[in-house]
Length: 168
Image (tube, rainbow, N blue to C red; front, top):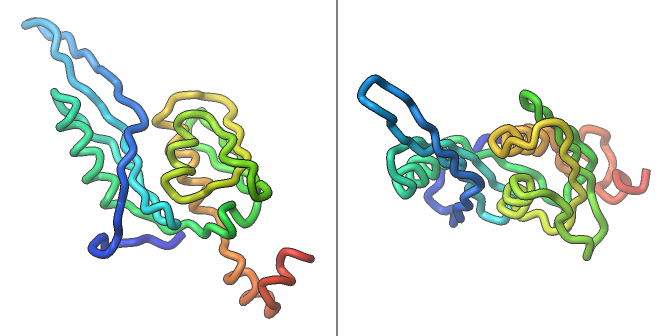
């Protein structure tokens, strides 16, 4: 997992994944707040997620976006798909990501689709098992993507060419 710290030259696009209304009951009545899960990405291998909480939707989204920009990671994208199959879990959410041939598209559910499209993956087969909570699905998908190894790194470690990595 390669952490990206500078966001100066990046053109990040934000995507709202979920908004959750939370009610706190006090003796003075009910207090409503909103929690917004936001994913930011540059459609070229960089992705981050954040959670923002506020009394208004726009403020929560703004806070979520700022939080997402603080924890960006780099993901290897090879010919529009992922280089190999990978699994990710977070709490009750389990995620399976498989590479797909060109033209397949992103076959994934709502929260996972947002993450995969933001990172720049155009062809991927994805399956979620267990919890369908968008917060946990986003985190499980990010964990799975952070486990990916680029073909170039694998080729260097084995001392072979990149083409041989996929043939062997």
